[in-house]
Image (tube, rainbow over the protein chains, first blue to last red):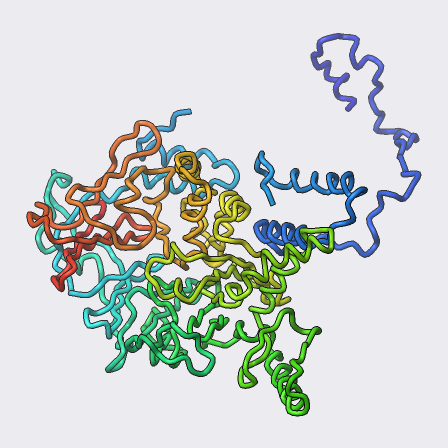
Length: 103
Length: 536
């Protein structure tokens, strides 16, 4: 990095890189770079997690998904409007066609 | 971006440029635009066999003798004619080069069928990894056969059907599997589906799907038989419970037992037959019932809906039989159900049909659709290639043009969809090809829709006989400059003057070499006219 200055490489503004001091190879810098540690553990994967590819191909996944939706018991009428619309969204995002197919 | 057409320029281009990721096969195929089977040898003198097809790796040409008893296998080779003169390109081929034997060497001839059997010449399946070929011989069909031993009334019977597994390298018969007094649809391999090393054979008469495995050693091993029983130990369980029921019957003859644990709706029948539906029929009916039940939230509406949609048609659902089967992957089957009349009639279009997806491992039905279902049509439109099961052993079979991998085929489908007057009828027409026949499409690059444009009614990748015309079939480049590249003309060079006789042609394209055979036959037992189309 220090060779930028040493070799006088061209740059738009001659004041660029003026603050940069080249590293002196004989006396290595004692400053360690700042490291960041997470303050929470929410994003850690579970210790027994195994990532593998889906064995069913996309067509079979679609069949299973539609079959599960048909067989999933529907809830009682009043409060079902909001949750059911929520569950409709994932289907629309997975199906690649622009129109949502009727059940 | 314009690509140069000159083959030398293309070869130089190939040396310096890598293709975009995932398109190496497509780029290699573009060379087939330059190397075309443009020269035709008309009316080649060839042995009087019925030529069936080239194997998918191009190593063998399968043909059957006229009397349907022998199998003759040829190896496709090439001309070994050299020209010492200066102007070789304009020289005509010498007569001794224009022979069938210049292109094909006979490897062996094996008698497959014994005295009263005939080889089914429409049936041939090939496993590429081991170079095994599966052939079928059968005795004559018996119509109006009595429905004995669990058979379905109305389905004809064939006394003996034998499947022969042959090693094509040397013609050794490795294994055989016999079905007696059964009926399997052998025409165009419709009743059998091969996926990797798994074979699904549909016995229409006994309503069973036999799953077999072709081992590397060449033996056919039974894995399971789906139909009356789904799991291997079902038969034991049902027989023991049937014994218990019959002993209960003797004590209280007026009370019909209801077995809730294992089965859904049951049928009241005489004590001789099984009093409840078992196997795949039970799975299917319970899936339908649960689907209808879950549509309605209210209890009374649910009962109404069940009465209207299920119990009203109950007998129709019970009478459904398995028509055809294909694999969707190693564990899932796509099964077409229909009525008995539709299974044996030639034109099954007028008979209602249903599709079901069945998981062999969990023995569950995953999906059930009517044949005019737009949901199934949408899945077919988007994921057609997954219905043509991609096999790891022959990756180039994935490049057969379909509307899921080719924009021109997709445009064709969309235009016929917009022209269709009735959408359910259009869906029916499109879905009638499901489940697909195994290995029924030629992998030849000349049928690739992005390379060539041709009349689909006269010739296409599907190997079936077509009406023959006198005009040559043109293959035109898809890309600019849209020139005519080559023509395939079946039949004699001068054409046939007698227009009254109906002629049918079939085309056999070698999957790799620029070589094709066209066979024109009249319906009477005249010898077929065979033309060889190749690149000089």
